[in-house]
Image (tube, rainbow, N blue to C red):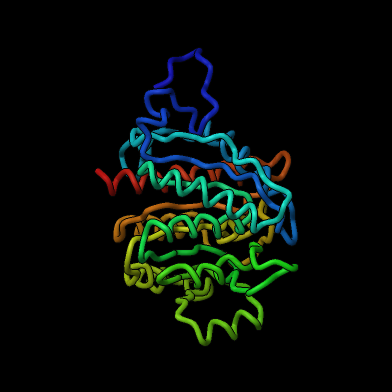
Length: 295
C-alpha cells in the first residue's frame, strides 16, 4: 500500500511501482483519447483521463471478491496520440500497439474514446487467435456497414467484428436501424435486447454460457441506463443497472478464457464525477474477475 503523505502515482488506481511496473504487470491499460467518429455528444476523447483520475478514489479491496485485484499488476501506458488522418488510420495505429501487447503476453484493457477504437483492437487479436469470440455490452447494435462516410465509425464496429471474429453476442441492445435489423435477420449474431432482461438476466447468462472460443469483451458505457450513465456520446433510456452489468461480466470471466477488454464512450460532464467513478470502478471489477479466474 502507498505510505501516508507520499504523492499518489498518476496511473490507474494510483499504484506504487511494485504493482505497476511493465515487467511485473499482467494487465496493461491503454488509454485512447479519440472521438473523431462521435455522432451526438462529443467528449469521449476526455474519457480516459477522467477514468484515470477517478480510479485514484477506487478502494483497492474488493468486498465482493474478498481480495485486492491490483496484486495482478496493472501497468498504465501513456495515452495513444490521436491522428487527424481519419478513423481507418487510427485503427491501424491501435492495432499495432495491441499486437505488441499480445506479443509481450499482456492482458490488454483499452479505455476510450469512441467505440471505433475497438476495430483496430479486434484486428490485432485476429492475428494472434485463429478463432475468438466477442461479447458486446451496449445500447446500440453498431451493425451499420457505413456511417457518416466511413466504415470505421463507432456505429459500424459490430459490423466490422462480424468480418473478423468467430461469433458475436450482443447484450443490452435497445436501439438500431432498419438497415441493421435487415442485416441481423441473415446473420449469426446473437442479440439479447435490454427489454428481455427487465425481470431476469437468465437469457443473457445463457447466451454468455453458450459462447465458444477465447473471449474478448467490448463494453460501451451506454449499456447502463441513462439515469446512471448520462455522460456518454449517445445515451439511451431503458438500460441495465450496475448489478446487472457486473453479474454478466462475472459470468463471462468465470465461464471463459477472457483475453482482453475495452471500455468506451465515456464523455465526462463537468462537475459530475459519479459517471467517471462508475467507469473506473467497473474497470477495477473486470480486473478483479480476471484476477479471481487466474488464482
